Length: 112
Image 1 (cartoon, helix red, strand yellow):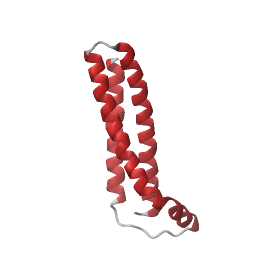
Image 2: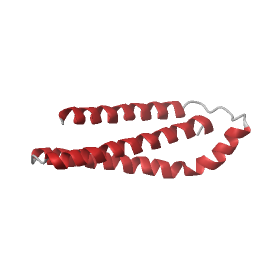
Image 3: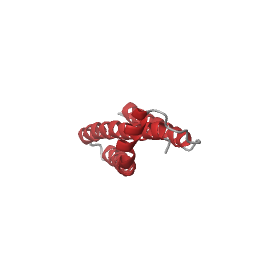
Image 4: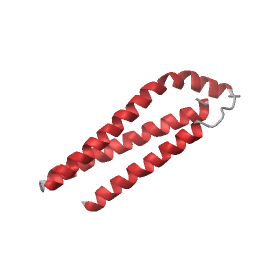
């Protein structure tokens, strides 16, 4: 169980690193979009950015809550509950990674 916990922590740290890099990259000077494909993509996805940011925040809160719940379950020696919570944590991490990648792609292609 400790390995899973360490792995989950490493995944969260990696996601935070990628997210920080995405923010740093997104704050670089914007370059004008030259292709019509980028223009069409931006017209469709830029309005979704606030909702994606809100989802990212909700996912991060859920991950924090699950990690706290796992610690409490471990303190009470509830290994069955720990395993179920770790599965939910893995799903939450996957969802969070997907949202972070979508946000990074929007920032990369639309220069926002």
